Every structure is written in C-alpha cells, then in structure tokens.
Amino acid sequence: MPIPTLSRILYVEDEPDIQAVARLALAAVGGFTVEVCSSGKEALDVAPVFAPDLILLDVMMPDLDGPSTFKALREVPQLVNTPVIFMTAKVQTHEVSQYKDLGALDVISKPFDPMTLSATINSIWADYYG
Image (cartoon, rainbow, N blue to C red):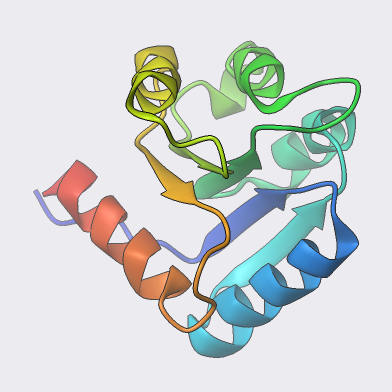
C-alpha cells in the first residue's frame, strides 16, 4: 500500500513565539500547508473544516490541555483516524508512554530544531504508514 501524502498539518500551540517558528519550519522548510490554532477549543472548531492529514498537538495548554484536546478530537467523526503527534518538553519515558497509550503516533520534544522538524515528521509518518 502506498504511503498517503502528507501535506496539511494542524498545529495546536498556545505560545505565539513557538507558533511562529513552527509555522516557518513546516511551511518554508517542509513545504506543508499549515494551520495554527492557539488552543484546544480553537482546534476543535478549525480541524473539521481544515481537514488536516496530521495534527501536531502541544501537551501543556491552558483550559483544554493536549491529552484532553486529543480525546475531544477523537469524538469528531471526520477526525477519528487523523494521526496525532504530541510536541512537548515533558518527554520522560513514562510520559511518552502515556501519550502513545492515548493513541499518538509519537512525541517530538521541545525545544525542537526548526531545520529538522519537517524531516522528523516525515520520518514518523513514513514509519507509521510503512
């Protein structure tokens, strides 16, 4: 089975500086179409309309944190099977295991390298579908 094309990424992150760096890294370096949301609640509104191939999800956000947002996204029919990668500074072994147990493809640690972020995501995507 051929690997599906990865072109549309929804990035959910509450920090404007990190949003800007990630958008630049994903769009300019990776060539992805990127939609950025500043909260889990915004992601729940935007994601069904944007129809991402992949969701990058910050773990620590006010109001609706990453794991809660992930669970809520899974209740949206058109997003049930959309792959999710968490991006977080909380990358101890037990924390990564918890995120993967929720159903995340993988975890990318913060701070991330903007020059290699797209390659890392492409590698995770290829491993998942390969």
